[in-house]
Image 1 (cartoon, protein in one colour):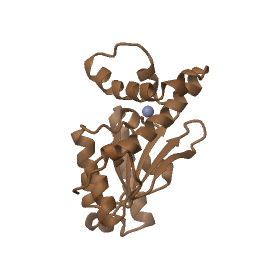
Image 2 (image 1 turned 180 degrees about the vertical axis):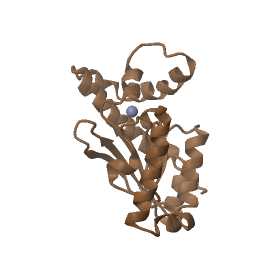
Image 3 (image 1 turned 30 degrees about the horizontal axis):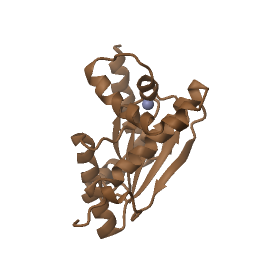
Image 4 (image 1 turned 60 degrees about the vertical axis):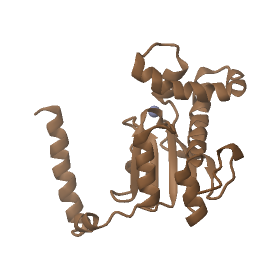
Length: 211
Ligand SMILES: [Zn+2]
């Protein structure tokens, strides 16, 4: 059996088990997608949004990239955000990083990962530079990386709040709340590290007054 055949076999087993537990499961999902949450997480295979939150298909709208970076020129992420906020009407947007993140470690290293990865990781280097005083003081490399994971999540949430997509929804519909979380690979527990409720004021430089 090829390695990918294991996936197809696993899929058949999963689908039949779901039907056994709940005969209407797929019928319901077919006609309804009303997730309350948008999840922006890391692509790391150890951090699957549904499994670690004990949720089912249909409950979380998901976007993942290396080190869960929120970049204001990322058409992919902004399209997901636009659709989730304006069409699915999600009530919460969660940026979830994880301790021990390889993308964060790579951004701190001085290795040349060649153009595309360098470009992406530079966004994380920018987060480091913004918080250099706090991070440089930390002597333990692992703790410093973990702190950067938290700060990257925080900056990601703040970058969401800078978008007109979020600001317009805050003004017109008093949602969504924004959450910054970090998942622990060692214990499987999610730690909330930052929150911006709908309507929070940010640096006026980023606030639009003609939404
Ligand atoms: Zn990661």
